[in-house]
Length: 420
Image 1 (cartoon, helix red, strand yellow):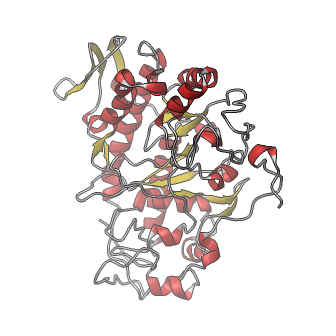
Image 2 (cartoon, one colour; image 1 turned 135 degrees about the vertical axis):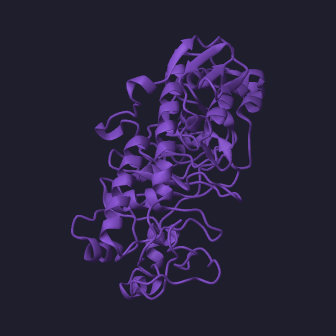
Image 3 (cartoon, rainbow, N blue to C red; image 1 turned 180 degrees about the vertical axis):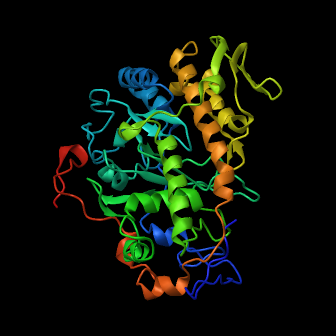
């Protein structure tokens, strides 16, 4: 655990007597992430689970069934909420060419499903039609591009030993496996990798301490390596020692590389040949059980077998939930579902097995890095007083609001264009 953060900024550790409220700039072991990356967005709320799926083909089939249904059946299949019904008119999602008229009157063509991160580490698909999503967070869609990275906080539970954060190049929905959603924090406030979502003055302070090589992505790397859960919120100790900073950034860059899974021209996660998981027995068409044999390092998917599977991958948890069990459950729970959720692959797709192998690899590698994260040596920290003296704290209210990025017209309800 990192040393306790201080308020003197004189190279000595200070003690905060009690957890401070989120947004105060102080926490039990360092400044809060809420102040270092001040602009955050709440998780998406789809309102109807059938708009997401582990495969894109199911989403297209669900759309076609809904579009062809009669009025009464369409109403039932749609699963109306107070925010969305087949008669709701809304603006198009930024960057998505979808219809904005009433779905009941004209569904239009099926939108192309987009890849998203569904909770931590589970890549799925979403129908990007604003008429179908209760709360889509358009401000996230406006800044999602080939430069953007999203930090996702994980809801904290008592005695949680899992990671406090994950990062993705995909649009995340922010779903929490523990049922306690955190926040989504884009690295950049504007498209094109412009205007880092960092507290004003933070980069200048860190460059003065650790050199001109400090960048927004190196700050992100440090945050990934050093972030910790606390009752006050996610805390990120900031070291005053450059050697410690450099070691943490190096570790964070490795965490970032793994979690991006080959995005932005990187390499996909891989274990060495002798440790790489392989399918020893094919996954059956309808597996109903997932089990792990620690002695043989075998993951059993029904009658299917994958090995070797390191124990670290099986035991990898976020919010107290095993990620492999959660991933499997999401792909099998819909077997007895009603309505559009029942539209799903008739047999286990080969693509899911490939995704499972990659997920095992990712979790195994992340588990191997956990001891290095826990061992980030405690030492002198940049305290709250130094952050205030540099103008980092308190964070200006404007830094907590999204930037104005509208440089083009966005289609509003029923094809109307908003006045900018």
